[in-house]
Length: 254
Image (cartoon, rainbow, N blue to C red):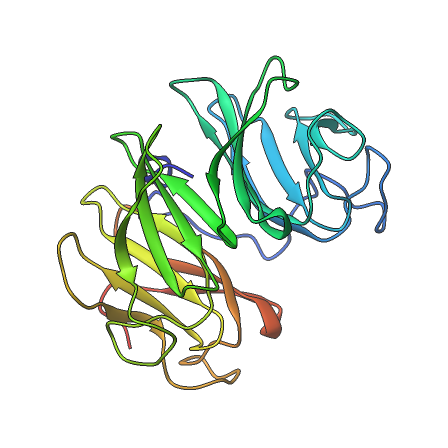
């Protein structure tokens, strides 16, 4: 998800009950079902794209419809193996997918998905995103780092981690998802460190902005965090996976 998409009104209130916009018909592989959905992307026209790892496919849900459309994977021309995330590259009008268990990142045109291509190989990628300059950021969970790529390049630049698996502020441990804000600071959820780390542009180490107090379920802790987004006020929202909740950390909160 692009950084400039997360604008939440400062006086917004949260409903205690949500509405189902995709799936909701038990686990399965029909077009009105999902089976272990992970990454998602919302387009400008409120079309929802879901990376469904249990069915090895990407589904597109138009606003208000009951059934999705398979746009990548399953029995199509481009097979996927546990795709954990999907985004839209608006410049090329294409899907970019972390095809995790095939150890690659692939790009498929939205209007003709038969002409897909591998753009990054030999990577165990979970989350990915793009900034407002069109740079692609990918999480390599096995190398415990986040790399930035210019589209078309084969060699990326490490922007978070890259110093092995560990707990130091210049290290990551099983990073999962990534968000980039307007200042091009990188936010990374770390599954094994139970924290979200922020790495500012050019910094050699990060700062903990959510969790970091060990594994647990108190309001200062996370347990296996996954998806992360940051709004225009600097509030960090985290999918606290093993605690089955969404947590919000205001800027500067501990």
